[in-house]
Amino acid sequence: MKSGATQYRTLDIAGIRALLSGLPHIAARLGRTAAQWRIAEVSDGNLNNVFLIHGPAGGVCLKQSLPYVRVDPSWKMPLDRTFYEAAYLRDVFPLVPGLTTQCLHFDPDLFVLIVESLSGHQVYRNALMTGADWPRVVPDIATFVARATFGTSVLCEPFERVFDRQALYARNQTLRRITLDLVMDDPYHDHPRNHWDDPRLNAVVADIRASAPVRRAVDGLRLRFLTCPQALLHGDLHTGSIMASATDTRVIDGEFAIYGPIGFDCGMFVGNLVLRRFADLSPDAGRRCVRDIVRFRDRFVEEFTRLWADAHPTPSDTRGPCAFFIPDAATAASPGRAAFMDGVLRDLVGYAAMEIIRRIIGYAHTADFDVIARPEERATRREAALRFAFGLLRDHGRHDSVEAAFGGLAPETS
Ligand code: SR1
Ligand code: MG
Image (cartoon, rainbow, N blue to C red; front, top):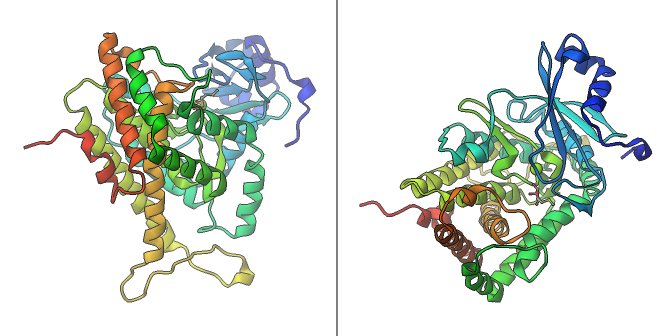
């Protein structure tokens, strides 16, 4: 990555106006003169400053890395995360053009990323918390994961191109380290970054930490996270990384992009659907959650399998994709492909469980449970989510299907 980091300064509203005035393609998109642009800070995530800029002709979204964690300035951090987000957008946008945003500009000195702005969208977590039930979002996310991962893997591309890309994202070590520590390590022992406000959770936390099968599962998933570069991942695909409306879905915030196991992206998303289910007091929350997880699995497998069926092996000297496990011509069956997909879904279950646990007892919680007014109810719901995730990890690898792992979240109907 090239950078003149000495020119870095954190931009305020005047600085943004000046920067954008000097970018003709952005200024044209906004329209008229800089004095007419409305600039509002909308920083919401843990790491960066984010601004929306609107002019008479249109809008853009500007994101700037800070030299520290936005929500904890004492936690210093290099600036390169917007570089990786820009790279991720450039790599996956052609694969999923309607399901993410286009990178319009990246400034390697200021670590500023500019993307198209969205209108009429909400953060999907917030939409779910206020009762939205939009049928497009879950299949859209499944399509996004299938296309973005398949298209950046050796199942689709010559290994030379994939390995060059792996080498670039291998440098995104700061954010991989955060995921490794915050998701896969801290919650499983005492660490000052962990926190939970209700002692009623202490017993289940102790049970999780004392369990040998959980330890084995976590160690296995941690190792796969570091040693299985199957495809380019979004790396932080929680429901706050999705902007949605009833008719449109966009994945944002790809700064955690790395090569890793495909089931990691699937598990992050599914884990957040499960968090929502435990925080949702409405009677059909369980049924909706299982419906959505099954919808996600069905669409993901369908799309990934379709893409794989269309990939054709090429002679090795022409450097085409490596489409392994060609289906049997007579039966169309490919046990090798089925085993690969089973492995992805096994990973999904494990990483979903780890996401649930870290969002309740680790550093970065989600807002889902905060709206439950009574502290006892909040604690009961969080404890139930932790017990559920505990079971997923304790039995990891022994679920025959996604239904076997998550079906218990829906109440029995007679
Ligand atoms: C210090 S960053 C904490 C969390 O925020 C991001 O959104 C990721 O989820 C990360 O784990
Ligand atoms: Mg984020």
